[in-house]
Image 1 (cartoon, rainbow, N blue to C red):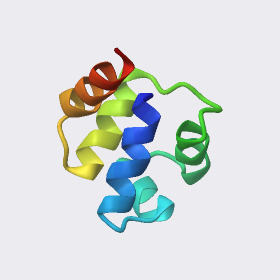
Image 2: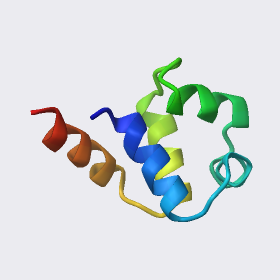
Image 3: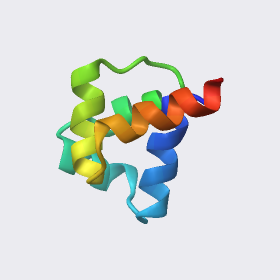
Image 4: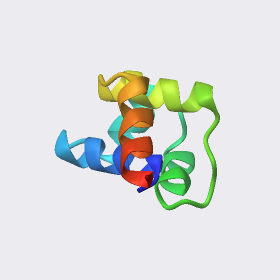
Length: 70
Protein backbone atom coordinates (compact mmCIF):
# COMPACT_ATOMS: atom_id res chain seq x y z
CA UNK A 1 0.00 0.00 0.00
CA UNK A 2 1.10 3.51 -0.58
CA UNK A 3 1.53 6.14 2.08
CA UNK A 4 -1.43 8.05 0.65
CA UNK A 5 -3.72 5.22 1.72
CA UNK A 6 -2.60 5.64 5.31
CA UNK A 7 -3.27 9.36 5.23
CA UNK A 8 -6.82 8.67 4.07
CA UNK A 9 -7.23 5.80 6.54
CA UNK A 10 -6.03 7.86 9.50
CA UNK A 11 -8.17 10.86 8.50
CA UNK A 12 -11.35 8.81 8.18
CA UNK A 13 -10.59 6.88 11.37
CA UNK A 14 -10.58 10.20 13.18
CA UNK A 15 -13.81 11.30 11.44
CA UNK A 16 -11.90 14.23 10.00
CA UNK A 17 -13.09 15.85 6.78
CA UNK A 18 -10.77 17.09 4.05
CA UNK A 19 -11.60 20.61 5.15
CA UNK A 20 -10.65 19.84 8.77
CA UNK A 21 -7.33 18.33 7.72
CA UNK A 22 -6.66 21.24 5.39
CA UNK A 23 -7.22 23.75 8.18
CA UNK A 24 -5.11 21.84 10.70
CA UNK A 25 -2.24 21.14 8.29
CA UNK A 26 -2.38 24.51 6.50
CA UNK A 27 -2.43 22.66 3.18
CA UNK A 28 -5.18 23.33 0.68
CA UNK A 29 -8.15 20.99 0.55
CA UNK A 30 -7.60 20.39 -3.16
CA UNK A 31 -3.94 19.48 -2.62
CA UNK A 32 -4.84 16.96 0.11
CA UNK A 33 -7.53 15.52 -2.13
CA UNK A 34 -5.02 15.17 -4.97
CA UNK A 35 -2.52 13.50 -2.61
CA UNK A 36 -5.12 11.03 -1.31
CA UNK A 37 -6.15 10.20 -4.88
CA UNK A 38 -2.55 9.68 -5.99
CA UNK A 39 -2.59 12.61 -8.40
CA UNK A 40 0.20 14.50 -6.60
CA UNK A 41 3.24 13.28 -4.73
CA UNK A 42 3.69 15.14 -1.44
CA UNK A 43 7.03 16.44 -0.27
CA UNK A 44 8.47 15.26 3.02
CA UNK A 45 7.54 18.62 4.56
CA UNK A 46 3.94 18.25 3.39
CA UNK A 47 3.77 14.72 4.82
CA UNK A 48 5.09 16.00 8.13
CA UNK A 49 2.47 18.76 8.20
CA UNK A 50 -0.27 16.22 7.51
CA UNK A 51 1.05 13.81 10.14
CA UNK A 52 1.17 16.61 12.72
CA UNK A 53 -2.40 17.60 11.89
CA UNK A 54 -3.49 13.96 12.25
CA UNK A 55 -1.54 13.73 15.52
CA UNK A 56 0.49 10.76 14.31
CA UNK A 57 4.20 10.40 13.85
CA UNK A 58 5.45 10.88 10.29
CA UNK A 59 7.48 7.77 10.99
CA UNK A 60 4.26 5.80 11.47
CA UNK A 61 3.04 6.77 8.00
CA UNK A 62 6.37 5.82 6.43
CA UNK A 63 6.68 2.62 8.44
CA UNK A 64 3.19 1.38 7.58
CA UNK A 65 3.83 2.07 3.91
CA UNK A 66 7.13 0.20 3.88
CA UNK A 67 5.75 -2.79 5.79
CA UNK A 68 2.87 -3.32 3.39
CA UNK A 69 4.91 -2.66 0.23
CA UNK A 70 7.15 -5.67 0.88
